[in-house]
Length: 392
Image (cartoon, rainbow, N blue to C red):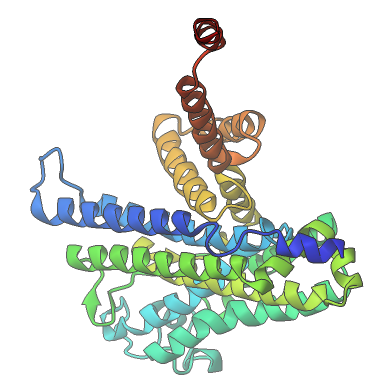
C-alpha cells in the first residue's frame, strides 16, 4: 500500500509540462541565435560566433546529452554509475570507424581499404569486426548495439545478483578501466594509444567546412531536444514512476509484486543508448576518439555535472553539464596549472551551498518571490484595526 501511494504521488505529465516547453524553447532560441550570428555577422563583429565556438558549443551539447543519460539512472533510479564513459566511448568508436573508412585513399599511405594505423602495423586485411564499417546503416546500428549490449549483459549480471550501492559503482568503474586498458593495445585494431583521427568527411560533407560544423551543431541540438522529450516521457510514465519508487524503497516495490531487476536493466540500457548517441555526435565535432575517453575520471566528471546541475532534474543535468564544461574551458585557459583545484572548489561550494544543485535553487527563488508578493498584497494589521474602530 505504501509503495502504491509512493508511485501514484509522483508528478504526472502535466506536472512538469512547463519545464519541457521551457527547455525546448531555450534550445531552439539558442541554436537559432548561434546559427544567425555565425552566418550573418562577419568576423570582427561583436555578434559574430566563430566556427571554433560553434564546434565548442556542439561539444557542450554532447556533454549535456551524456549528462541526461547519467541523470536518468542516478537521479531517477538511484544507480550511481561510474562507468558511463564506456558507453559514450563505444558509441564514439562506432562513429570513428565509419569516418575512418570514408578517408579511403586520401590517407597518408594511400590505401583505399585499410586505415593508416593498420598499414603502419603491417596489417594486410581488415579485421572481421571492421567489415561493413563503411556503411551508414552499420554505423547507426553499432552506435546503439555496442553500448546497449554491454549495458544489458552487465545489468543482467549485476542487478539480478542484487549488487547495489558502492559495490555497483566500483564494478561499473572497473568495467570502464578494463576497456580502457584493452583499447590501448594495438592488437585490438582500434588505433591503440592514438585512437582514430584525421577524419575527412561525414555523409559526403567535408568536416573542415564551416557549414558542416554548423550542421553538426544544429543536429546535436535537435537530437538533444528529442532525447529530452523521450526522457521526460519515461520519467513521467508508469514505468518511470516505478523506477523512482525503486530508488526510494526497492524492498517495498518487490513486496507488492514488481521485479526491480527488470526495471533497472531496462532503464540502464536506455541510458546507455543515449550515452552512445552522445559519443557518436561528439567524435565528428572534436575530430578524434581514443582510449583516454574510457578513463574513469571522465565518468566521475559526468556525475559531477549532474550533482552540480541538480540530481533528479532533467533540465538540471543539462545546466550542470554546460556550466561545468564552460568553467573547465575557462579555468584551463586562466590557470592551466591549477584548473583542477578551481573545478573541485566550485563543486565543493555548490555541494555545500546548493545541496539540490542549480536546478533546486531556481524554484526556491521563485517560491520566495511569490511569498514576498503575496505578503505585500495583504493589508497590514494596523490598517485592519483602524478600519474596525471606524466601523464600530
